[in-house]
View (spheres, helix red, strand yellow):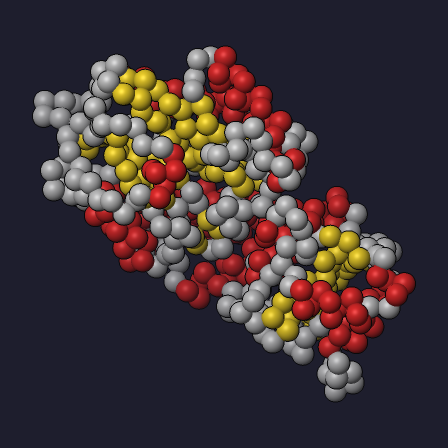
Length: 439
């Protein structure tokens, strides 16, 4: 409890001053390592118990890292070194998790070296000896058909490992998919608190981008705003995991297809009064990622608010969010949530499209998939994975609305980070519930 209270205060102090939101590199590294230690001590043992996997072996080589292993490296390790082998073993008799590395040195403060090269020059033989000493029930490797993030062991390492493994242990080799996905998708209390601040930073950057300090109607283009977002991220010492997009919907112009909207972001358009503009933007910081879509309206001369028909259209987007998140339940699959939500939305007269994905250590992360924009009948594999608590999702969706005032259809496209926990669903840091207004 004292540990949690200390970091609650620490994180509060970090983010209580808008000018001091972004930590210097040394402080970032310290925080990343402390969060990682907390995850090893409090998240991983529970996941190994849940999945029934008592030994997890991760193997990577420098510059070709397993996506899961990459998330386990200390902050000062920007890559694996030579061949890095990690072994996590749940010792049932001692009620203890062993965190070992078949490496010549410790992997930071969390993972202890278990290889004396002078005594055993062969790294593979050292790994086999470690396995034989513990005699696990299962030996889990990161291979998976449905989750790319959990499919990190390369052919060379897999074959070398299997060739060295004694025959009686080969039958114990299983896919680590449920454990690897669980590790990637599960957020600790510290991460959840930190995530709230990261989403707040994301919102504040969008708010600045969608303001008169950046947008001069009649002059500024959508690409100007895109590159403001990229430059702002760089100036703050942050990164983005995808190139932002900014697009326009306006009266009497044909609604672009969903595919065109995502692939034609280099076609700059001048932003004009009366436009409905939209962005898709996210940041990467402290090994977490955000993903957010919001809308703004460019006021015409004499207007002090958006037209009611746009306000009403935007409310339909919020309603679709409510329908989707009301159907979250632990143990449901993404495909089940998708089917129920689409049926309910259509019964209310909405024209929905839902493509909600896990969010966290990666932007398009591992966990249950709730639709894709081109797979509204469900997603085989990742959509069949069940919803677990303490997981975060980009609540990404859209609804098409016919505007007689504009003689066209528009698409309200929204995306906000949402947390599912034992207490139910909540947005990580609120959601957009009204259009941003730009003079």
